[in-house]
Amino acid sequence: MHRLILIVTAFLFCCDPLAATQPTTRPVPTTASATQSVLKPIELHYGIYLAGLDLRVTVSAEGVLRSVQTDNKSYGDEPKNERVEVREGRLTDEQIATLARLFADWDSFSSKPYSGVPDGGNVSIRYGEKTVSGGSEVPKQVTDIRLRLTKLGQSMPVKTP
Image (tube, rainbow, N blue to C red; front, side):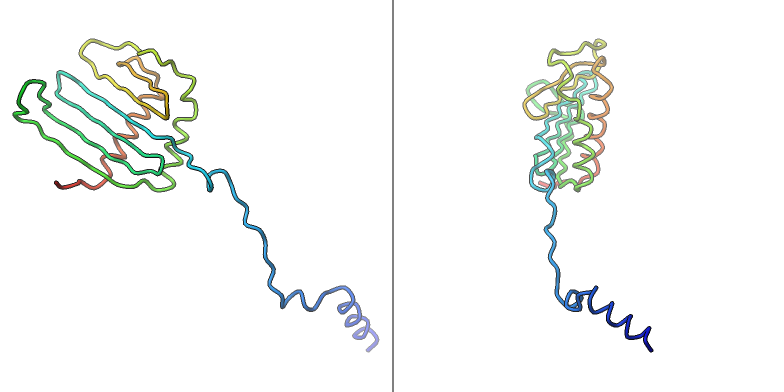
C-alpha cells in the first residue's frame, strides 16, 4: 500500500496532468525551397538542319513546360510537309527538383559556343541569364539536360489547336 501512495505522489509531483490535455503548437520550419522558386526559367533550342528537326522547350520558374517540335522543317518560303507537335503541362515538384539539380554547375560552363561535327545537331540552352550553346562537343551535362528536357516534353499531353 505504501508503494502505491509513493507512486501516485511521485506521479503528481513529476508529471503535469494538464500537459496531456492541452494542445501544443510547434512552429513549422520553413526552408528556402518552400519560400522561393528553386528553378530559373529554361529555354532549349535544338536542331539538326539536314534532318529538318527543330525542337524548342521552355520551362517557367513555376514548372510550366511547353515543347514545340517541328519535323521536316522547311527553310524555304512554304512549309510543305512540316509536322508541328505542341505539348504542354506542369512539372511535379520532384521533376522540378531533379531538373534544378542538373543545373547545379551551370555557371562553370563557358558562354562561348562549343564546337561540333559538321551538319550535326546544334543546341542552345539558357538557364536564368546564362546561355550555353554548341555542337557535338558541348559538355556531357549539357547533353544530359537536353535529353532530360526532351523526355519531359514528350511526357506532356499534346495540345490540340
